[in-house]
Image (cartoon, rainbow, N blue to C red; front, side, top):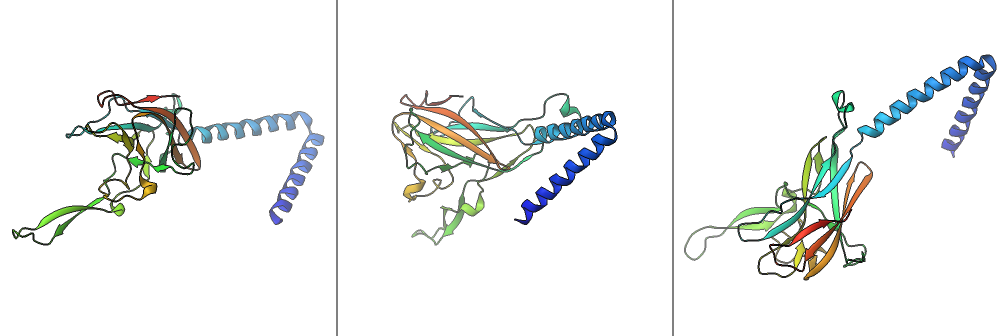
Amino acid sequence: MKTRIAYVVFIAILLFLVYIGWQADQKSFVGSLFAAFLSIFIVFFIEMELRPEITIKKETVPPVRADGGKFLRVIVTNRGLWWPLKLIMDRRPANQVRASITFLTESNNPIFAPERQMIGRWSNTSEPVRPIMLSPNPSGNLEMTLLLDLSVTRDAVDIGSGDSEILDIVMRTPGETGCRGWHNRMIQNPNPRPEDQFELRMGRYHARVRVDVAGRSFTALFRIVCDVGIEDFRLESLN
């Protein structure tokens, strides 16, 4: 209530000052008003341009592991400023960028529960695994194993002006006809929770990628082509 009263008082004072200025000297007042609005427009324009601007594109050549497993990923870029602005300033970095993926049918209906989204995994972050040494085996040697530990990785990254980060979408092994959503809660986890499993059978699907930064969201839609051999297993951009 107090805030509304303050706004009303401020607007009333502003209108009163406009009236006084108009009555005193119309020509000078119009010139001053034009200069003020021009200054405000320039400041507003520059502030808008300096905000992080995200683009999401498919990776041209999907990586293949030594065992033949294939990953489909997208490249998330914080677009640099356009010339000539980039000669004198730089776009702000995109801090704490988070991503989520929603899997859809080809008619854009949710495959899983409508509220289920996969938390995006940034490919260049550490895998959520921690090596530990086990007690000696019967032969008397120590054994090392890997356990899921989400504390050694992160779900958010910073992207500088003109820089990019790669986001995992799905992966597939040579012996599978389908694929699965790939994220931190699946890696080295023998018993993932049902809500963390995004198994896709052979077919074609849509993946809606959403990237959130600084209170803004950017989205892109891709087709997952998973009704072909693993050599042709691919993403197709839909927008």
